Length: 73
Image (cartoon, rainbow, N blue to C red; front, side):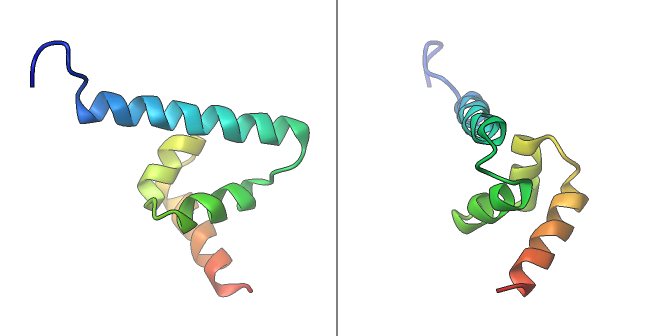
């Protein structure tokens, strides 16, 4: 990797920011609830730790919410 090449960590940080902005835009429009955010992010394979970083909530709270969502149809 050269000095000008972004690291995986910096790319991840930028992608998290983009996801966060898109989710917040939908929240402001009233079209996406927090549980919907969790369900979508979980369905694309993100871990509860990754989701918690995106939505700025503790990982244990996100994990609990996702567990409940998985139990409901």
